[in-house]
Amino acid sequence: MKTVKVKDKEFELFLTQEVIEKAIGDIAEKMNKDLAEKDPLFICVLNGSFIYAAELMKRVSIPCEVSFVKMSSYQGISSSGKIKEIYGLEEDIKGRTVVVVEDIVDTGYTMSLMLEQLVCDEPKEILVSTMLLKPEALKVDVKLDYVAMEIPSDFIVGYGLDYDGYGRNLPDIYKIKNS
Ligand code: 5GP
Ligand code: MG
Image 1 (cartoon, protein in one colour):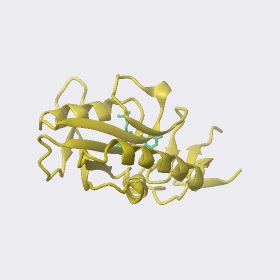
Image 2 (cartoon, rainbow, N blue to C red; image 1 turned 180 degrees about the horizontal axis):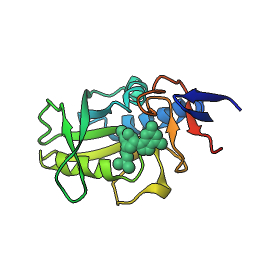
Image 3 (cartoon, rainbow, N blue to C red; image 1 turned 45 degrees about the horizontal axis):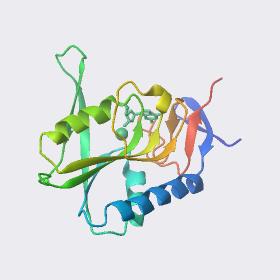
Image 4 (cartoon, rainbow, N blue to C red; image 1 turned 180 degrees about the vertical axis):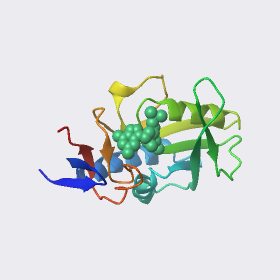
C-alpha cells in the first residue's frame, strides 16, 4: 500500500485520481442534464474545493458562471464559539440558480451555515454539490443534491484537502494511518 508522510502524520492511499474523476464525470453529466436551461452560477468554496471545482467545471458543458468564495472562520463571542461567514461573493444571486461546490461535508455545520447565509440573498434555488460526504459524521440535516463519493469518517488529505496546510497538491486521496 502506497503511503505518504504529510508533516508529522502517515497517510495511506485511499482513492486514486482515476476513481475520483470517474465519479466527478458522473456528477457533471447529471448537471449537464438537470441544469441546461437554468443559467446556473457555480459557487466554489476555497481552499479545499479547488481541484474538485476545476475537474468538475471542465466537464460541465452548459452555459454557466463560476465564482469562488471563502468561509472565514474566527473565534467569536457566541455560545458555539466559532463563527463562519461567506466572503468574496461578488455576483448578485437574487433570482438565480446557485450551485455550491464543496470539497467535503463532514458534520454538515459549515454547509448549513453557508446555506443559511445564501438564502438571505434570495436566490431562485440553491443546489449543493460535494466531492465527498462522510454520512456517519453528519450532525445536521443538510440538503445535498450532487455527491460524488461517500466515504467513512477517517481524516483524509489530497486532491485539494489539507492537513495543517499541507498535502493539497497530492493528486490522489489518502487516509490517515491508524497506528
Ligand atoms: P463540517 O462543517 O461539515 O464538519 O466540515 C467541513 C469542513 O471540514 C470541510 O470543508 C473541510 O475543510 C474540513 N474537513 C472535514 N473532514 C475533513 C477531512 O477528512 N480532511 C480534511 N482535510 N478536511 C476535512
Ligand atoms: Mg471545504
